[in-house]
Amino acid sequence: MIVTVVSVPDGGVTRVSVQEARRRLATDPFLLLGVELPEEEVPAQEPVVRQLGLDDEDLEWFARPDGSPRAEFLGDTAGFVVPVARGGQVHHVHALASERFLVVVHWGRRAGLAGDITALVRRERPRDAVAALFLLLQEALSTFRRAAVEALLQVEELEDDMFEERRPEQIYRLSQLRRHSAVLHHALLPYLQGVDEVITRRMMSPDFPVERQRLAQEFQRAARLVLADIESLQDATRRAFASYGSLVAGEQNGVINRLAIVSVIFLPLSFLTGFFGMNFEFLTNRLETRDEFWLLAVGLQLVAVVGSLFLLHRSRIWRRLRDDD
Image (cartoon, rainbow, N blue to C red):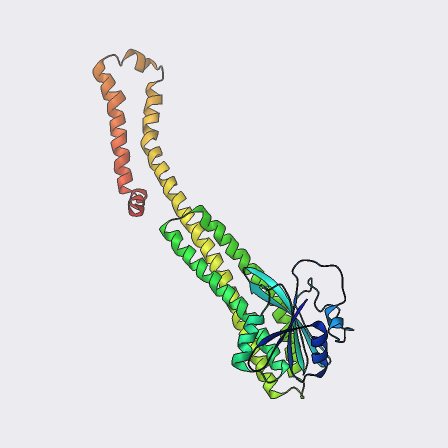
């Protein structure tokens, strides 16, 4: 377990021991503490909350890697399991905040927000742990916004490429992006519903400070915008799939029209060939000269071909093929 302290307001990061972190949690008036746990499974050990000297009676879920998105107030302490979109995957960051401290637990460096929070602390300079908590929640939302916008741009590029040249790998990439949008939506929606319910209930309390109401309203507004971005991504993937299907249907219609032209040309020829191949008495006894053969066997076929081409030239099928070409 790696424990770091983010100093306010300069945003410096200092690595400390577990014992030092425990002491500072009990004495410092304002502390931002980051805990990095290994990504791989390790043998069972003492829970993180107990190692840090925090009350673990209602925090059995805290710092467990299998935790689902969560938001709840436990007296003077608020606990969150925050989804974070990183590298095409969704990780979960655990946050525990009170009036004096904010403890953030993550697994591995990829899922962490230490660098982002450090930059935000330097820029925003939060006055207390609750303000730092809302910075953390806002930054987690920003990861989803960036992931949704990046995927949306890829969908639009694929859709443009489709109209220039359709390739099989495009539909595979669209399937991946559609799955990615579903993962983002599935991870964010229950979390936002839980947080919105908890924040709304707290905002109805008369002792909830006005400044924190403003922070909560800004978070709710940002959450709606991010959710709208993800839904726009889902709509874009569905539209791209529809465009791909329309292009395939158009190509199939062209093939069917060409087959129809071939059938129209060769159907009279097949009929004439089959008719004159029959052993009727008229055909066997009356048609004996070469001129009669050329007139009926060849002349009628030429007339049938010319007539078929003339009718096709006057029809919509021919004009449609010509326009497609």
